[in-house]
Image 1 (cartoon, rainbow, N blue to C red):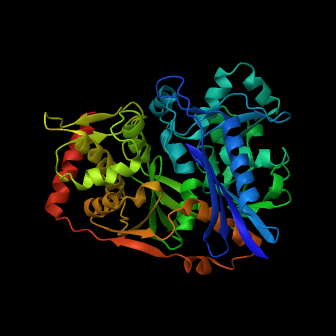
Image 2: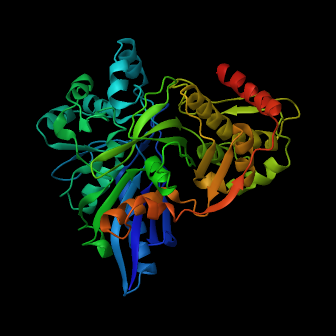
Image 3: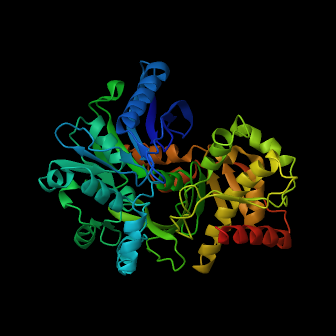
Length: 490
C-alpha cells in the first residue's frame, strides 16, 4: 500500500489539489483558475461558491485519476490565501456576501480614521500588525455595516466568520467544524499573538461580535473528519496554515534567522524569530510562523501586494506578451540599466510603505522604450520591492543573508539572478518550488505520525540551484536609488 498526504492549496487566482508521497515528492496535481471580481475601484472579491467548487473538483480529479485501489491518504492539509474574509449562515452555509479578498482596499478611509485616533500602537503591540485594509477585521466590519440585517444576525449568533481555511473546513465537514489555526488567526487584527487568544478589547474596538469567530487550533492538529469530500470522506484534516507560513514550513526554515520569500500573486518575505515576537520599528509585521503543541514560533514578515500579478497584467492588461514564459528571453536581451521603472501599486503599496492610496506608474519612458524594457522593468519591480523589505529588516537588526525562494516566478532564472544581484545575497531555489502545499503536507504528516520531528523534515529539503550575486555594489546602489526615486514620485 502506498501512502499519501493530500494538500488543498487555495490561492488568490486558483485552487489546487496536490498529492504528495511521504518523501515530499509530488505524485499528482490538479489546478483550476476562478474569476476575479472588481465591483469598484480598489475592490477585489471572489464568489465563495467558486472557491468551494474549484477545491472540490480538483480534489475529486486527483482522487479519481491518480489514486489506486491500494493507495491510502493518511491526512489532508489546507493552505490558503490569507486575510480574505467570508461570513456565512451557520444553518444553511450560505455566504451573506462575496469573499472580500486580501488585496481589497475599500476600508482605507476607515483605517485612516482609526490611525488618526491613535489606535495603531495598541493594536500593533497585541497583534504585531498595522491598521490596514489588508487584514480581516475591517473587512468583517464592512460586511456587518453594509449588508442589511447582517449585524443583527451576527449578534444573535446566526453567522460565522472565517478566513478561507475555515470556510473550507466548514464545507468539507458538512458544517460540523468551525475552526482555524493560529497562523490564520494572527492575520485578522483580532488575535493577541502573545496570549494566543481572541482579544476582547480588539473585538470591541472593531465592533465585532465574538460569536462570529472560529476556534483556534495548532497548525498541526486534528481539525476534523471530512464528510463532504467524496473519496476523501473519513480522512481527517490534520494541517492548516496560511499560505506564507506554510511556505516557510515547507522550506524547513525552522531555525532562528532562516528566511524564505514566496513569489506568487504577491511577494512575502518571512524570517523565523523563534519564540520571540520581535516588534519591528520599520513597518514590518510580526506574525505567528506556526504553532506546534501549543507553542508558537514567530516571524517577521514583509508583504508586497503585487509580484506575479505584474506579469499577469503585462500579459492580460497591456497584452505585451502572450505567455509569462516570454518574459525571461525579453529580459535576457535587455540591459539591466535600461532606465525604466515600473511601480506596480495597482492596489496600493505594502511594506514598508503601507500606502493604500498609491497607484501604479511607469517612469523613465523615452522614444526608445519598447516592449522589452517595460517587461524587464516589471520583472525588476519584484526584486526592488524585495530589496525594500531587506532594507527594513536591516534597520530592525535582522538581515537575511541567504534567502530560500519559492512560487511560480522562481522558475525564471533571469529574475532569480537579478534578485541575488540587487539584494547582494545568496538566493537558493529548492528542487521542489511548491513549498506552500508541501509545508501544510508536512504539518498534516506530523500530526498523523508519519514524520517524527522537524529535523526529519529538514533533511528532506534539497537545493536545485544557488544564485550568487555578481553585480558590483556601485551598480546595485545606483539601480536601487532609481527605484526609490520612482516610488517617491507616486
